[in-house]
Image (cartoon, rainbow, N blue to C red; front, top):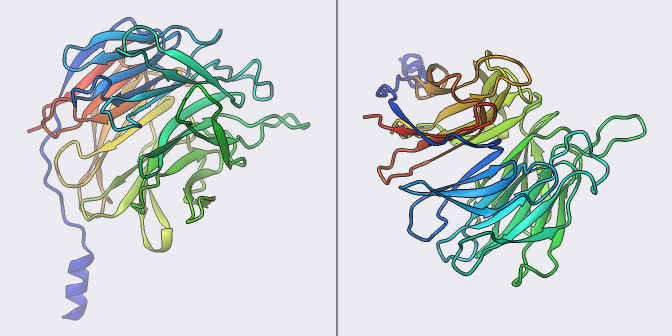
Length: 384
């Protein structure tokens, strides 16, 4: 009898989910390259706006009219490549930082590759904001504002590659945390977070220990790593996976267990989830192996089940193919079985994806910034 009860406890139960329903709205059909997108309140009306890093400008689209506002022209000779937006001072309006001078072929000479700017807003937040140029590494690629304490934030910036050695191989990239002064036009001090991760395409902020200081997950050649601070503020790390990964996001199961998803390898074919077990060991499950140039992930509870689902997007560029977006939905409470839904196809060559509730109905929307298709779209979540 005891054996039968135990067996019943470990058997996964099915999760009832409604069929996903999303409505497409094209916000902009004349995007150069939608390198990066952020969702943040830009004007203090308590609604999430869309911030876009285009190749030669930084713009935001005002919710709900989606009126387009430009806050920066072309900051560097080469393309912009990333943007981060977050309210840092509690006034309800996001601050902006930008990465530019995108030069994938140069990882040694900072004069030819990479740039980091803080955009100092105008008084009325209209027109072009004043760029404050900060020190940088070559191949600047991704950035996030990370909470570093009560009312404090650091700008964490990650290059794609580290410098080439005498053998011609690219080494570990230097990830820096920039500390913003009271006057952002003055010198920004920096702390080195790490310098060993190779070919690292993306990273993602988290706060798993809920201590008010955010950590992050970083994907690279040697897998996914966790980075966080100890009590003295010193950065430490742990390796969570070993598969070459390009994208990473975290989520929570319906039972409250952590998981993270990755696209493997960089610009790859595979969507995998890693389920939390004991002692920070992670069980890998493959959801899809058919992506063409996988380039973006988002994780949220799109269907209102109490646990998160996964959205993945791909471009079909480096690996030629039809681009698209898919939603992966767990079918049991242990997240061992999944069902796939196609949300979008050839009309969305995905460069970046973000998810959040844009209309106050507590259902996360999917926002897609694109490359070859030169568009910006919202997939409105109308799931019942």
